[in-house]
Length: 228
Ligand SMILES: [Zn+2]
Image (tube, rainbow, N blue to C red; front, side, top):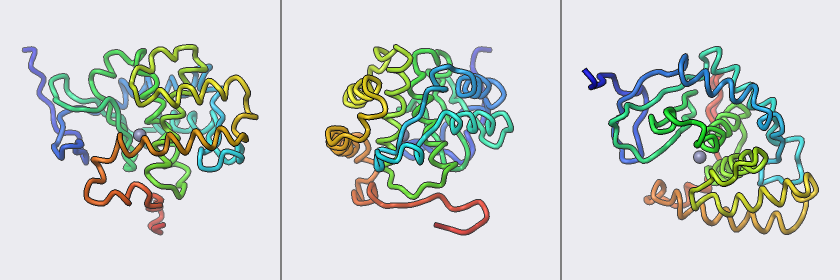
């Protein structure tokens, strides 16, 4: 039998509101993700500010943050799911603030061409870990930039084929050329503002009923039960 039978991924619905079939891959594909985050020499070079605070490099993202995510996957605190082959979905990866990644079968079957997406989603996991107070727009701008920076540092920027990554790729290239001075330039801040606007085009559908929500500041409910 080639037909796979499996359950719905727990606590997950896709953008169109439907349940998606898949399986827990924490011990299979999760090991690939954890290994990438822990041992990849390019991840070891990841050190960049939150783009909202470009001058505060030390309060931003560090390689050790990605390594912590690797450890949380290894500990099974963060779980990794993959979708079934036949599932009709429109995403490659998702990180949910319930400590789980969901990756499309398309990605798990050829992760080498989708490393940028893995870094993007891992960046959301870092944001969750840090419990930063920020908007969805901030989260997406940083995650797009992280993916672009990773691929540029790795010399694989040509794998960033999605149009949405164009501006981030150029920004990352300027940063790599003049690191870390470029973060402090007016030009950097101006370009980040331009990229922030493009997030509406990409994610606006999610906030159709209330576009202002993209700007809402929030922080994940703390594990000890104290919200925001
Ligand atoms: Zn994202």
